Amino acid sequence: MSSKTHSLGQGLDALFGNRPEELGIGNGERGSQTLTLDLIRPSSQQPRKHFDETELNELATSIQENGVLQPILVRPDPVHSGGYEIVAGERRWRAAQIAQCHEVPVVIRTLKDREALEISLIENIQRHDLSAIEEARGYRHLTEEFGETQDGIARQVGKSRSHVANAIRLLKLPERVQQWLEEGVLQAGHARALLAAKDPTGLAKMVIKQGLSVRQTEKLVNRLHVSKTRVQGKSADTRTLEAELSLVLGLKVTISGDAERGDVRIAYRNLSQLDRLIAKLRNQKSVSEASSF
Image 1: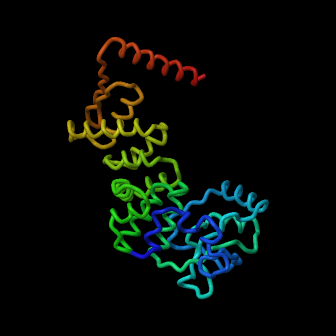
Image 2: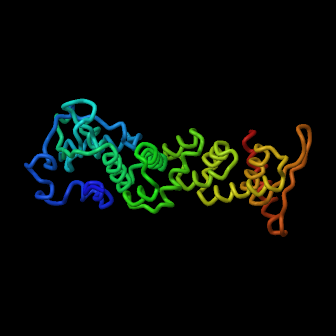
Image 3: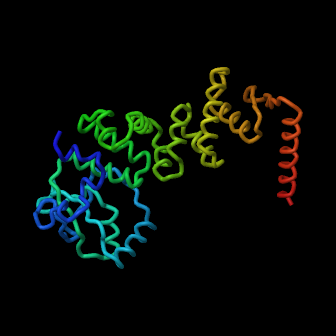
């Protein structure tokens, strides 16, 4: 393993250095220098795909006042001769464009594709800039394109192997659910719970609509799983409705019947639970009557 690759897990200080002599000012490859923005382009390997517009504008304002304080890490562009590809710092580059800067400070490193991707992942993970899906896609890219093992990835990014494995599993979710996770509508904990659901998309819609916590989502998925093992003949929609009503009422709800008729059974264990149920139903009736006027 090269010294460059070995240093990846040591954090951004190992990449940029803390002192001028570590940066190698004036000695070429590692020295901090300036490049015009038109010579720099984003990397297609960048794991981060979403950049918050408000945060970019705030950073642009700061750059107008104070300049770009930390150099952008780039490498010679492997595709366009004479240009440079961003390895770490795309957010600063985008904000500098908004701030209408002509040039930005950079540190130029000669890096292979694998090293560049690993560094980009580490920077974003350390700064908590990646969504769970973006992080998972970065890990998958390392395994599929470069043959990296989950153990190897874990060592490089400073995470446990189980963390890497669980992250990659999120890519088994439907695209719509992955999109909600990437947009921040769902949390990683929600997504991990949804992996066990038969209809992750339908359940995710319910979680978003009702604003369920991760713990509530886990209970809901477990309740659906128990219902499925007990009543194999029920449709996914029926089991979902049972779980939704159970969550709203705080009691176990069972639905049986066919397309024409059926029964809804609400089970309570004591009179206190029955009293609370009656109070909820009466309150709901009052709200409905008031809204009709």
